[in-house]
Length: 171
Image (cartoon, rainbow, N blue to C red; front, side):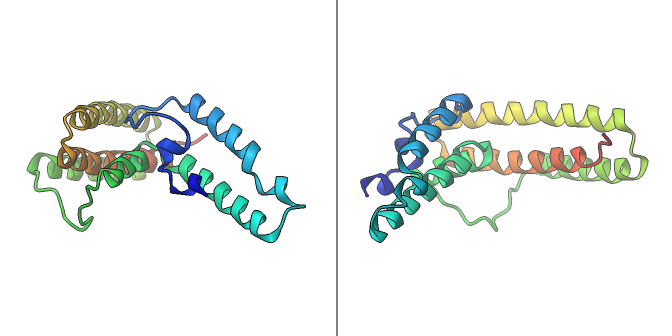
């Protein structure tokens, strides 16, 4: 049951990092699931089946969190005991202006459905997210958890906008 007490980075035996090699994570998950998947314990005691289910669930939760950049950064903040009330807002006027700009862009593109403009804005937002992830890495290297949190708030916003714009693309 020691496995259930490990944080997700320890569970998969990978270094705590903003960047993550998804294929290595996939391999480690697969290996652990081969060992602990509940189907392997169908002829075991009820207690062993329950433990296998708990471990398998822990593995799945860890995979979900570590494979998503936003959830991974939130988790890194959490394991470093940096928690802040999510209802707090960022007092950054430039970011507020950017939020308004993108909200207006999304509203207009929702009407015009201009595919080229949608794709162009998605590309712009992806560049923004790449820059923010670099900022988060720098903050993490300096143990600047508040800076990480501020950048994470912007990252969430841009990821949400990318998703909204992506939903406007016609296939």
